Length: 218
Ligand code: GRF
Image: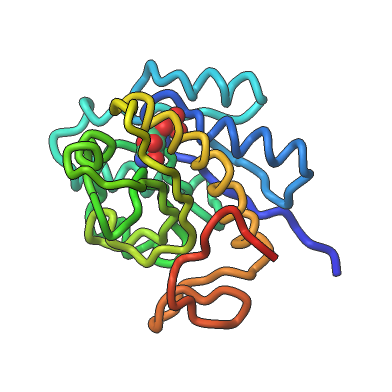
């Protein structure tokens, strides 16, 4: 069977290290993925440079140019529609999306969040994990639904919290695992092994009862 590469668009706001990992993995492993465009709400996002250097089309949609969230998301929707991806990948896109936009991309929009969801949705997860005295932390890839960081989780990485950790060291350990899991989840979507149905996440034709843990033991 000939497999057509999955056209995706990646939305960023900053460093774009997850974007970089997706680009590198796509090339290194010849994944059936084609990044059709990278959109940033921040004009100076470092990730725009990474995309440009990789020959990927870049778009800046500065939220400061819009009077409200609904107007911004309408423009964002129009831009995404123009690029016409099969999957929208949020990779450090630091904006809350309107319900309308999220619903339009139901089952076709992924996010990565630096916590073991449902624990610690929202910001400053690493500091909150340290303050709570947890002994493990991690990252989650999930389908996006209207409630912030509350969509069905596909995959998680776990890392230990060490005595000597501060928020930065813990964030770095988690981020390194984000770079492993996000390309895998996107690959599974491209291979049609992964989808969102009313019952939840379907992986290899089974409803996922809990997130897939990385590293994957087979
Ligand atoms: C990551 O920790 C991601 O989980 C969160 O924002 C950060 C983005 O990092 N949503 P980068 O821009 O991919 O380096």
